[in-house]
Amino acid sequence: MKTIASVQLPAAVRQPQYDRNQLRSRIVHLGFGAFHRAHQALLTDRVLNLKGGDWGICEISLFSGDKLMQALCEQKHLYTVQEKDRAGSKTIIVGAVHECLNAKLDGMPAIIVTNGAKLIHPSG
Image (cartoon, rainbow, N blue to C red; front, side):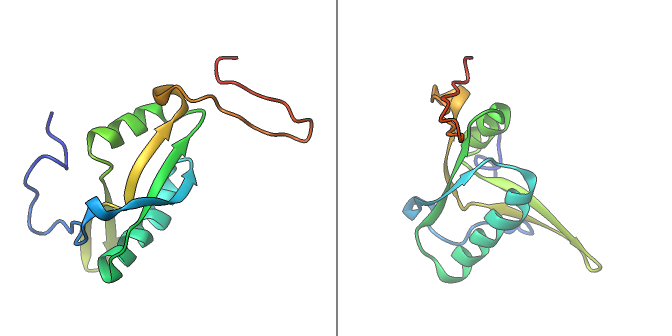
């Protein structure tokens, strides 16, 4: 299957300029929503492009997002952001995500601690 990780991309597409093999999961983020992808992970990617480092992101999704996480894994944790302004638009490949874990895909029990200290498991 062709993905952004396996095909030659146009020169205008901005790609990570840092060594992604050096990334370690130093940031853990619960959920992989649009705000995080378009802002927090994008900013992390920009810092890595400017300064380098090994601060990768581990995305964790406990109750949903299995299709999104599966697609992310198939693309070697790369995804695109389209930035638009008056001058036009830019396509950016974000490479700051180092790994992702999903309760459904990885068989993880989801534990939520509430004020009553109840254990909630995804299987019911």
